[in-house]
Image (cartoon, rainbow, N blue to C red; front, side, top):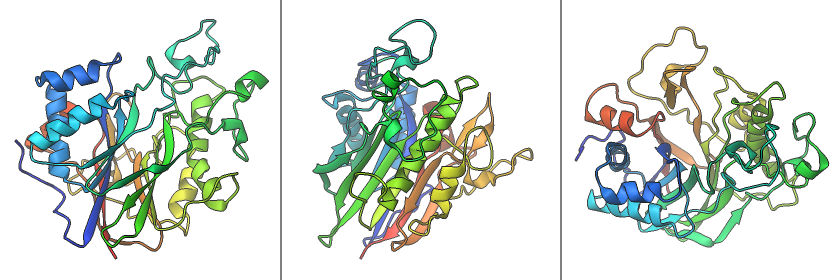
Length: 346
């Protein structure tokens, strides 16, 4: 058991919200559940140790395989409870990841490959997302935007050569976009706007993934603007998830994400790590980085928590220790580091 926590416990009148791409995705359906239940995996033990140390009241996990019965998520919850961290509520919806399209999306002359799915995935649910919470989740009132068509987004940056059949079928979300409410202790509610986007790489000169990544962030701008045939979210809310994009470094089209970060309806607490390694070739502040790709661009800020403007932020951080048992647990689990924000409750 790792007792160290780099995020001080939230007070009785505070709420800690966190997001983490925990690397809980495996090569086939059922393998994550099997690995959790077997109890011998350093990656699972590392993930459990990190989540316990994080001690968030509300945690959005990205990069976690989805199954219809939520058996893997339930098993993970059980492992957390055994380690001393109890979550009374869990929530997940089926992602677009691995959902078959029966189209040759990647133009390789074959059907049903991982890149032919609605969102990249070797099987339905590979690399979805899920929510764990100490507060009651209003699951019955959740709004799932995962089926929203890419072509229906105003100003969509559709890739060249996208035919009518694909336009009529292709969803915008590579994983999920959804809105789900939490019941706060005073009887009011807090809405969570959650998403996980495709990496803006692994494509060709058409820049399909770069365009889609941009539009997955732009969706929230259009929703907040009331420019979609959907009800805009009412404050207070928190927008959070894995944008898979750094606005300063790495590849991608950062315009929509930059607009979100500077939108007056949102606030960016700019969570920082206490310990950082310098990256002289980067433009961005390495203390803001939430992932490290050793065989690629290095450190990037790709995971975000953006509370609505009226919420009072009392703390924020990136859990990224450089040495010690928690650093080892993180390294065993994922290339990403947890991001947390503490809010003052009414």
